[in-house]
Image 1 (tube, rainbow, N blue to C red):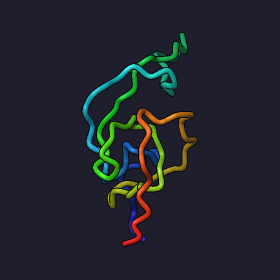
Image 2: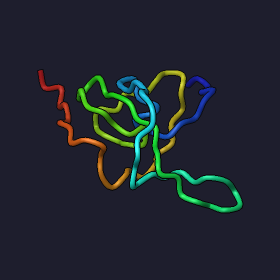
Image 3: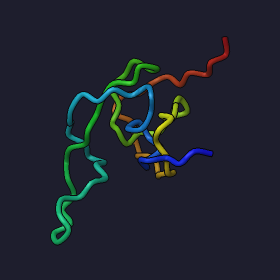
Image 4: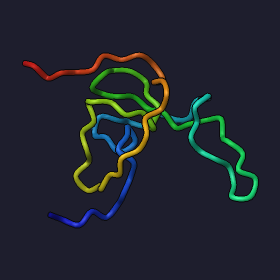
Length: 93
């Protein structure tokens, strides 16, 4: 077992299929602005999934997840809804 140098959530942001594009408005944004005021942010980083060919928020979780080798991951709760509906790949063939 090798020592992982970076730890990230087990979500799109640490998946080999994810390429970041920018930020979008997000009613389920999990991030907060500042330590004192605890104001919920309204935008989440998003990108494209090369497996499903859809835009995804970096905080989404799906069965197509493929971990980057140099990153240790921690389990996180999935968001209530994806950015766009997408088909899960079962890799049957």
